[in-house]
Amino acid sequence: MKNIPYKIYLDEAEMPKAWYNLRADMKNKPAPLLHPATLQPLTAEELSTVFCKELAAQELDDTTAYIAIPQEIHDYYKTFRPSPLVRAYNLEKHLQTPAKIYYKFEGNNTSGSHKLNSAIAQAYYAKKQGLKGVTTETGAGQWGTALSMACAYFGLDCKVFMVKVSYEQKPFRREVMRTYGAEVTPSPSMQTAVGRKILQEHPGTTGSLGCAISEAVEVAALDPSYRYVLGSVLNQVLLHQSVIGLETKAALDKYGVKADIVIGCAGGGSNLGGLIAPFMGEKLRGEADYRIIAVEPASCPSFTRGKYAYDFCDTGMICPLAKMYTLGSGFIPSPNHAGGLRFHGMSTTLSQLYHDGLMEAVAVDQLSVFQAAEEFARVEGILPAPESSHAIRAAMDEAIRCKETGEEKTIVFGLTGTGYFDMYAYEAFHDGKMTDSIPTDQELAQGLSGLPKVD
Ligand SMILES: *Cc1c(COP(=O)(O)O)cnc(C)c1O
Image (cartoon, rainbow, N blue to C red; front, side, top):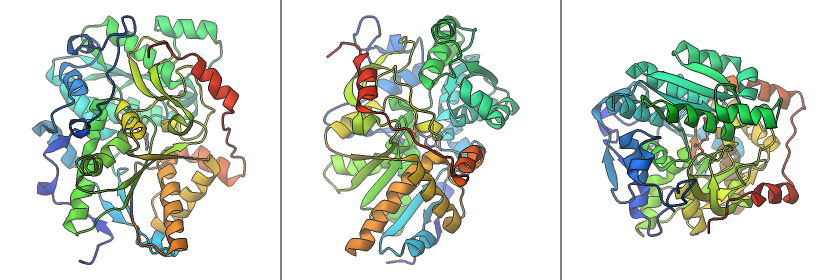
């Protein structure tokens, strides 16, 4: 076997020219999105009133395996891609494991996360359609930042509803977005009917992702020159994020390395869905086998303790219904520091794969996640985002298991971003003030009791 460098970079010419649509190889397709009023599967036409036309088509396309990456998007990708696949030699040594650990690092751009991969695609299709701008929500702020950058590049207006607690606690993210020209509003706000309603029912609420989604959708629905865009959960987002997995697979293939275990953190499922895409594709086609592991916070355990059912994607119940592992759209997770993992539901594609036993899921608690983050930072140098650190935790646990069994497994995990804007979380950890609140069965039952009756 060739000597593996610390960082494997692809050449620009080796970058993927097409996204890979995992759904094309799934026997059991993800369940369709349903219209919230009629409960009928949404047509492309209906979806196009909310999403850009081309993105609506991608959302519904269950059959085209490869979708060409438009040249303009490819050109922008070249400004921050290919991202490195790092052989974690230092972490291996630190853990004294026979396992071989690789991570795909997506934090090497100003937005600090993988979200730019889809933001630039969504902004491109909005521009191509001749729209004036887009609306969206952001929780921790990574998606809003990525979208602001993408909109600035294509000259689009960008209206971001930012979960109020983040708006107040993460002023730096907010200002990065404004630097790129975005208009940032704390949610819930008085700007929308749904925001006013939520404020009336829950005065003093610090907001939630589900609520911010409702506001962003409402604003886009009322102005024909705007569309709503979303940074996770949707099939189209997983499609764009497949660039992560395709590069990872190409880099491994270049050195003749076969992965055994592929691990990623899962909020709405976009980085995980993108990372695993080509590996899962081989698994679905019976060409190779992999263990694929989703890692979620114990405080928001959609896969491990949720229910596979149709549910609303937002609190205001104006968005389509998706069949997914969910904790209920009314479930508001405790203020865990991994803001990007606090969504109550999960990608319909990943939900179907998990339901079919094609992937595993683990839930990890916050303290052990930050312990892993700190260990990782000290040996590998990169300061990881709290979300990404969930994957680090699980990868380290697998590597430690290899040490016990003597197995030389090859572990690949997704390092989705950097944590420079999460230093309050690190501070709480260092000061011994970090807690975790894991929902009781009773609390979960309450969230699930509000599921719409569809099945
Ligand atoms: C948003 C985010 C996540 C989680 O979102 P997915 O759609 O599940 O990938 C993970 N890591 C980082 C750094 C993020 O910004």
